[in-house]
Image (cartoon, rainbow, N blue to C red; front, side):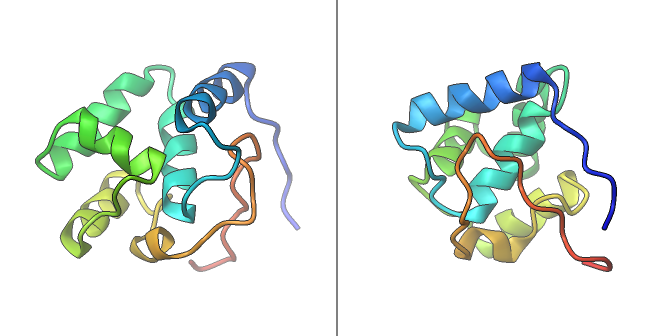
Length: 113
């Protein structure tokens, strides 16, 4: 088992904002959960959200809908998100429910995934 690091307070606060906007403690799917944490982990989360929007040729409002579970990405969008996040969010994550709450850091992926 690898070393577990605790997220920075700013990351936890940013994820708490996503949870408050969603209005529920559990993300709609693992993709939304992992994307929310990936965005929040940057010192400039808005820039990350804009990068995702640019990669899938849409606006940040669509990225917000992805996070809140209003939509799931089409296959080409899920692939683009995987590329931008360098695999932190995989295409299959969007069709898999996650057991964790927004405030819980996503589980590490098994070695080689």
